[in-house]
Image (cartoon, rainbow over all chains, first blue to last red; front, side, top):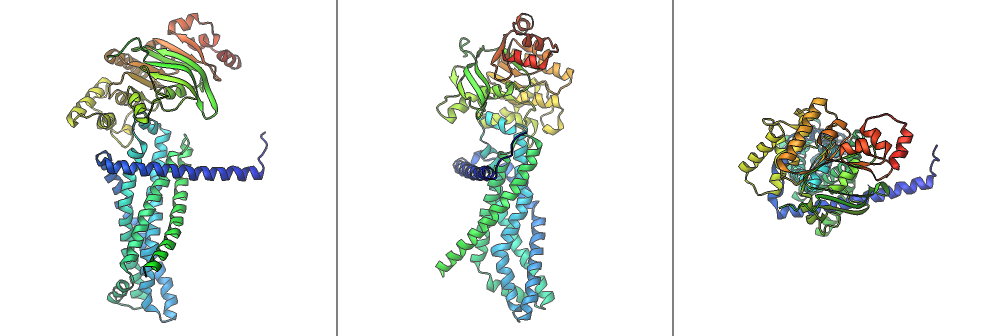
Length: 271
Length: 264
């Protein structure tokens, strides 16, 4: 029977593994960046048909669930805010609170979480299955770059579709909150929309859209990376999928925190 | 034109493995052009690993691999390495067809990526290759719609798409019924006859070996190196190794003694 390892060596091994993973992810990100450069230099070498099919799966197919989640998020946020704000006679600030929160934070974040669950996990599972069935080896021996062949279509599709889904999420989240404003606070639709327009500056919408580009990048790269570094059996495919969802959501939330601070600094400087 | 004096594949003092684990060491052999060579050995002795090193998927721990006289190990750049790799086609054990593409698209992929052929010409080549492997009319099928034997045939067609000089087949008969397996053996012989390609096969199937192989290279367990090298008939009857003789005559033996023999 093997002797169990001491806590110090376990901590040491876990730490080394974390740093190896970070190094691996950075190295992989470099390969993807180089792949993007290659795609710009030789656009005809991008698999456009696969890209469009991927756009369809990430964007059009994901639209209903993203819309539903953003609608419910808008409704829940508006409902809880309305109850509190009404006590202070601050009803008129409901569109500002919900609108700004939706476009700056919640629509990009909820969209990213849903896209991670739908598309990120699918990317990881697809690539991991290809690795198990030696399709990645076949690509390599044919002299084809897995980054160009597999990741570029997914990355281009995600960079196009996640911001679009986010903008749709913005509108639907605000529409949900407007429903609460109309029913709970007896505001008219016109008033609600007018107040929303008054409070939501274009820069806030741009902030949300820029965030969604970053989230699309993080989700695609981390999910594909989890797929590539999977083991060689079917259990490993499941593990890769789980790891991709956890890693992507973690990176999205970390990225969001960093960007929230970065944008507030930018606004301060600009003002 | 090919120079027949230069071996199609040559391994020089090759040590292969993963990380620090040595799977086989000090392997040296040369494969003549136009021959069919089978790599044999017990389960886990490193047959597929050797093949993956030969076609450049992994780098050896030491030693050199020459493909038609050019070293794939010390190729000066990645482009150079890929140029050498285009000398061969590979059919993997489970076919490794891209499941998001139809059979015809799988076969057309190397043609689209590495040739300047126009689409009608690509379609004509695809049609010809599918006919050659007996899959005429199955081009529009997805890999998931094919039987195991048909997937392997489609993988053969993709491996042959660029008319490579060398073909590697990893366990082509594994998991097939005896008739499909015999048909695949016939196909391998036909491919050699029609294309003159050098073919290297990893397999366990004795009937296949005796049908197609010109030469057998047998690997010993536990990094035992090459324990048998010769024609199937020679090795079956005249080898010094009891393990090789038992293996080729499908005789039972004491597994522990077999392992020791295999290492000797």
